[in-house]
Amino acid sequence: MTATQPGTRKSRRRDRAMVPEATFTSYYGRPIVKASPWTADIPAYLFLGGLAGASSLLAAGADLAGNTALRRPTRVTALVAILGSLAALVHDLGRPARFHHMLRVAKVTSPMSVGTWILTAYGPMAGLAAVAEAGRLLPRAVADGPVGRALPGAGRAAGAVAALLGPAVASYTAVLLSDTATPAWHDGRRDLPFVFVGSAAAAAGGMAMLATPTAHAGAARRMAVGGAVLDLAMSARMESAMGLSAEPMREGRAGTYRSAARVLTAGGAALAAVAGRRSRAGSALAGAALLAGSACTRFGIFHAGQQSARDPRYTVVAQRRRREAREE
Amino acid sequence: MSNHQDPATAVGYVDPPARKGFFTDTSVCIGCKACEVACKEWNAVPEDGMTLTGHSYDNSVGLGASTWRHVAFIEQPSEGKPPESPPNDDSAGAPAVGLGMPAMTRPGADTPAEERTPFRWLMESDVCKHCTHAACLDVCPTGALFRTEFGTVVVQDDICNGCGYCVPACPYGVIERREGPAGDDAVGLAQKCTLCYDRLKCDLEPACAKACPTQSIQFGDLDELRERADARVAALHGTGVADARLYGHDPDDGVGGTGAFFLLLDEPEVYGLPPDPVVTTRDLPQMWRGAALAAATLLAGAVAAFAGGARR
Image 1 (cartoon, each protein chain N blue to C red):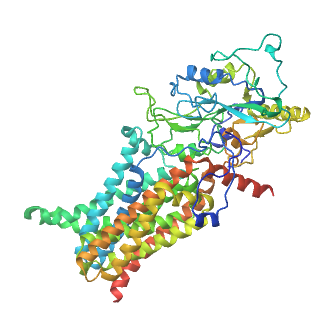
Image 2 (spheres, chains in turn blue, brown; image 1 turned 135 degrees about the vertical axis):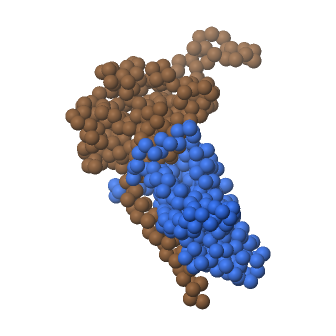
Image 3 (cartoon, rainbow over the protein chains, first blue to last red; image 1 turned 180 degrees about the vertical axis):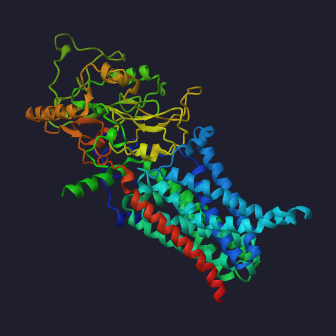
């Protein structure tokens, strides 16, 4: 029916207090904007990119501080994560064989184009930094030769460049999502980059806590806890500022992921703060929770967007309100 | 780029032809779907499922990868008097005896006039809007989407890598990645109306406009179409059709006006159109600034994480 439909969605009471029930008209309830054709590859790509970018920061810091035990796993994490991120992105393409067409142009109006170039610069640097860690595995003759001797310096330089590009790798993906007509992604545009960098820091810190002895993981713990706090605070701020499209953030599949993200991130951060320094097992458990929480954050925001695009209410009601506010 | 600048000139065409577009006057659409069929025939667009939706005469449901023209059928209770009672054909003969057979009666014949619902059909042939500020074009990371010399927006099949970014970017939900049928050349690629770029190149009008038997779809120079549309709305208002309105004609709207615009008889959302579409790229400078600030926050956080250890 095209007649005016009262809002049929059952919202929880706490939602109703914030967003009044809206009546709206649509074409047989069909979506107006199209949901992205993206699948689990894309939230995985967002998560792994964040993990890589923030890991490079930890690695460079550890390098400068002479903390080899922290530097090694974070450099390796950065490389493995960025390769995984790239693989997920290519796997998602409708025509993966044409991935290189991304390199035909550089467009500031396309966050995916900007991101491609950031990754093109970042990936080899993260790779070189990780390869430098393999120096100790080389045969004695090679390690003592010119290549072996150049490796630590090259690793340090490449790691520094990767660390400077890492924050861009972690944050541009927020613009990638926001620059769409998907209501929940576009409406969160102000706070989403901060949610993403917070989540990235929590993930990288968490991974480093898993892989590093507690005595050497102090910086990782501090980054993890700080990132978790930033993620939780900015997520809450984002939801309260989003208006109608905050609803799909709390409902359905997205709601489940978001709840899990909150519990895992808050729990992981609390455990890291309390037991992270004293207990190796506690540190590892906290790290794993933070990693999982970061992944849930990305999957939650991804699915919230998909849900908000599939229901015409989030497009029609919000736009009508905007139009009416302008006409008044 | 100014809203009122010709989009072809703005992207660097020197002395391009006049901007071309569609004016779709839904008040004369009869829902014949000739446009849908003509589009598929000319552009070799595959069928998109021969299933019935069950909610109306609309079986193609909406614009998508394999529906570049779509006729919306809106069955709507209308205001005004219910239709006159039809003459009772059985009044002359003896009362019919119920044999349990399917009856051949007119719709509504068994319903008293006062219980009948006043009703109207709205039909609208929808198409890609060819926006002045096109989000799909802005976000395309390969340059597969481009602005033609006619001011329209077209996908190059041999460049598109199927990333799908244009799909959620479009505020009208037009462009889509084709998922089937297997063997089709365009599977995995973004697809939408080209405004028959190949026909325009040969001074032909687009297939849909050519096939339209009621001139509901009018093709031509956009400036002239806008004048024609203004005159048509004024004429309809003069005959008492107060709900007639134009959609997409305003160069000051959120997408800088569209190359394909419409005369509607009800609110846009009734037809499945967004009430106040905006090209999301409009907010991009603000979004990049936010991302830069967030990146700086992460960098500062990392420095603090190490400095915190040194202090202790």
